[in-house]
Amino acid sequence: MSYNLLKEKKGIIFGALDENSIAWKVAERAYEEKASFVLTNTPASLRIGKIYELSHKTKSMVIPADATSIQDLNILFEKTLDHFGGKIDFLLHSIAMSMNIRKGLTYPSLNYEFLRKGWEISAVSYHKIMQTAWNKKAMNKWGSIVAITYIASQRSFPHYGDMSDYKSYLESITRNFGYHWGIKEKVRVNTVSQSPSITRAAKAVKGFNQLLILSEKISPLGNASAQDCANYIITLFSDLTRKVTMQNLYHDGGFSHTGISEALISSKK
Image (cartoon, rainbow, N blue to C red; front, side, top):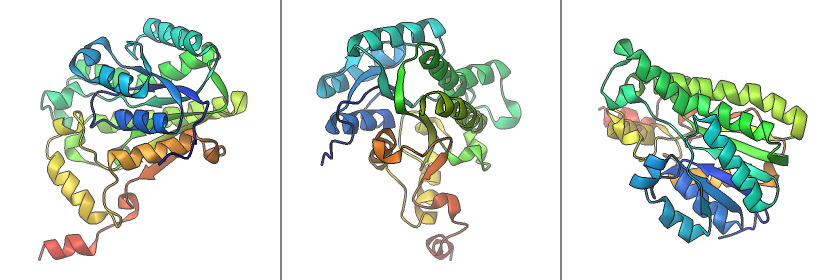
């Protein structure tokens, strides 16, 4: 059902890969809510993913860009602003990658070159995107910028490895850049801490299926799906949340505030 929450709003969605990705679901919902947007991902991701299928479905333009490259980001924003004939209203950062996790390296045995690369992709890219938008004066007043994070930024999940560090840094960028965006243009900057979701990146985490089951048992409302997350993000892009900024917003069925559940205790008997 559409509520026209994003009618006449324009934006850029980073990170849609296939129908399981949160960014994909956000794009579908944004289109339903009458938004116009540009889809972007790295050239390699465009080759292996299905973004052009999504582009056709949502009548959106695809512009390749490596979010760690200022040159690529400058081109992306210039083309986007030209395409829309003016400023945009929302940005979604749904980008994450850990070479250490992909290579099966545990936290005590991190490869530091892999660490640096993952940090650039998963966290610093968020700052670079916002800095480029800032320098280009790309955001309309009362716009909204959102990134996807996970509670491993606050708690220890052994197999989440260096992704935990990246998410902590991502949330710090949200608070610090969010202050400046608020003062300058009344733009909101938030992270959404989502339940474990079955995405290509998540499948690389050792023990992910067990984590998914554990989270489902602990969360009073159960895990939030990628579709649920997209619905929530749409409200953050809308004018209904104009005074919500610099927050890490938990969207996890109550997992973040539950110590242990009766369902989990019962299953151990």
